Amino acid sequence: VSENETTTGRKSFTLQDTLDKAFVGLLGDTLKLRRYDARKVLRSCPGLLTSKGSASAEQVVKLMVSLGSSTSSIARDKSSLPTLLSRSPALIFRLVAFLSSAQLKIPLDAIGPILRQKQSAEMLNAVAPMRSPVTLGGQDEKITAINSTNTDTTSDVLSYLKVDDTMRQQKIEEGYRSMEAVADVLRRNAGIRDFRKILSSYPHVFFVNITNVVSVTNYLREEVGMTKEDLAKTIQTFPTLLDSDVAKISSIIDFLISIEVNEDDLPSILRSFPATLTLDVDKNMVPVVEFLRGIGVRNIGRFVTRLPPVLGYSVDDDLRPKWEFLKEVSQFDYFEVTRFPAYFSYPLERVIKMRYDYLRDRKQIPIQLVRVDDVLRFGDRDFATEIALDDDNGAAFAKFVEERSCSMKSLMRNRRNRNKRPKKTN
Image (cartoon, rainbow, N blue to C red; front, top):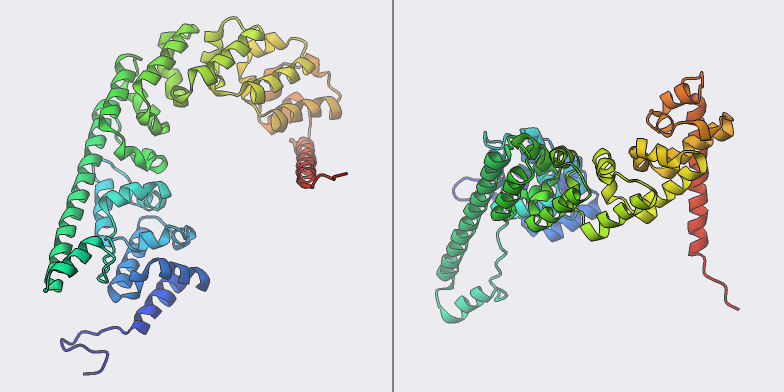
C-alpha cells in the first residue's frame, strides 16, 4: 500500500493535497480570490486545511450557486466568507428546505442572495451554527477540567463533545420553532403568504419578539382599521415595523387624528408610507406642522394626507430652503404649495432649481407665471417639450443638466478642498 493509501483502500490526502484543493481549487480557481485574500481566508478558516473541511466548503459554494448566488458575489464579502465556508452544508440545506416550503414560498434562486447578506448571520447562527472550536491543550475551561481530573482523557473529551452536539441540536430546534411561530402569526394575523420580500430586506423578522408581533398586527387591524391586505403590503414594504412599540404607534395615530387627518384615510396612508409609524412625534412631526402653519397652511390634515412623507422631512434642510426658493420664483407661493404639496418632495438643486433656471436663463420664459406642478410633475423629456417648448426631444435640456451638474460637482469639490487646507497661523 502506498503512503497515500489507507489499509481500507480509501485514498488519504496529504497536507499538500488538501492545501492545493482549498487554496488553489476552491479559493483560487472557483472563487477567483487573489493569493493575499485567499491566505487571509485560510488563516481565519483553518478547517479548510482538512480534507473534510475543504470538501464541506466546496459543497457550501455549490449549494449557494444553485440558489442564485454567483461565485463572484460569494467572494465579494471577504469578511464573512470564512464563516460561510465553515458552516455545515447539511444544515444550510435544511434551512433552504424550510425557506422554500409551502408555508414561506421563497423561490430557490432568491434564497442564495438572502443568505449571503450580513443581516442573515443571525438566522444562520440559529439554525446552521458553526461548531465551537475545541482545544485539547487546556485553553477550553471544560476540557481543562477534564484533563486535570481524569486519566482517560480521550473518552471524557468525546463525552463532552457528545453533550456539546446535543446542546447544539437543541439550539437549532429552538431556532426553527421560533421562526415557524413568527411565520404562523404573520400568515394568520397579517395575511402574509410570500416572505421573499420581507426576508430580503429584514432577515431578523423571524427573531422579533412574537408577543410584539401579535400586539402590532392586532392594533393596526382592530384600532386603525387596516385590512389583512393593507397589513400584508405594509409589513412587506417596512418589516422593521414589527419591532416597534405599540404605545409609540398609538401616540403617532393620536397625533395624526389631532391634526385632523381623517381616520378613514389612515389605512391608505400607512399602507403607502409605513415609515410614518416610526417617526418621533416631538422631534419630527411637531416641527413640520408648526412650519406648515407658519407659511399659511390652514388645513394641515388635508395637506398631510396628500403628502404623508412630509412629516419626516427636515424643516431646516428640506422645507425651509424650498419654501424660500418658491417665494423667489412664484407670485402665488402659498396658493401653489397648497394646490401641489408634492413640491416639497422634489430635490431642490437637482430638479427644482435646474428646471426653473433652464426656463429663465435658456428659454427666457417668465417663470413667475408658470404653474409649479407643470414645472415639476413631468419627466425630463416631457418637461422640455411640453413646458420649455423644445423641439429636439429634450436634447438641449439634457445637455443643460449635464453641464450644470458638472459645475455643481466641481464647486463642491473645490469647497471640500478648501476646507481640508490647514489654516495659516500668524
